[in-house]
Image (cartoon, rainbow, N blue to C red; front, side, top):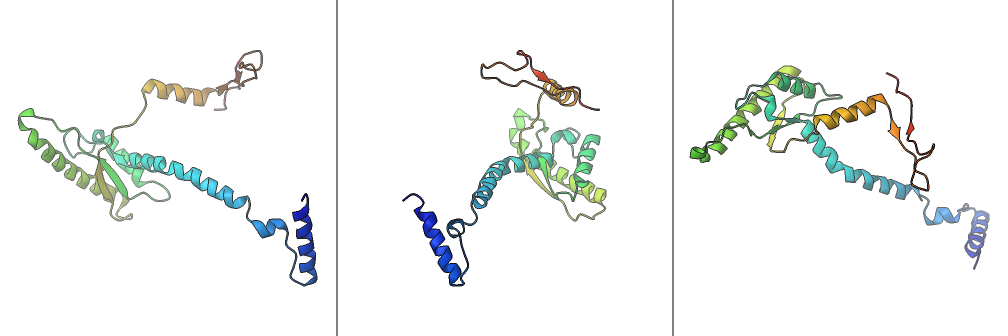
Length: 199
């Protein structure tokens, strides 16, 4: 049976060629798109696994937080104005869906606990109007109407020490070690370091 398929394909090819039908190889008859078809499918599966993470990150990036307002009010702080202005200047065009963190800076009164939700809703609605007014003024109405959706995520971030350390390593020099079969590193056990990055 060794070589049978190849020989049979050659016979079919020659017969088809004599008949004016053209010549096809085994590869053309079985799957002419191998392996590209399967590589494409594998890439789509890998990208799809990142899609929820990318979307969640974008939503948080588009979120106006409680600290962007003066405590318990709908007045935007200087940082809040800059945050919204950066959203309005995104390229190639800004995302007109903006998210607002539900007001968590409302004082809680145990004697009037039933009023907390009402106060929160009142401040949220005023903050939505404040955001829309600023974005329309910032863009001159060129981007149409901005939609503001309220959600209640927990704030994300890293500690200042960790962030500063990572930033310093990224800008200063790259560090790393090359593993050997014995579990050590090359160059006599010393880590491999490159020179300082150009500034």
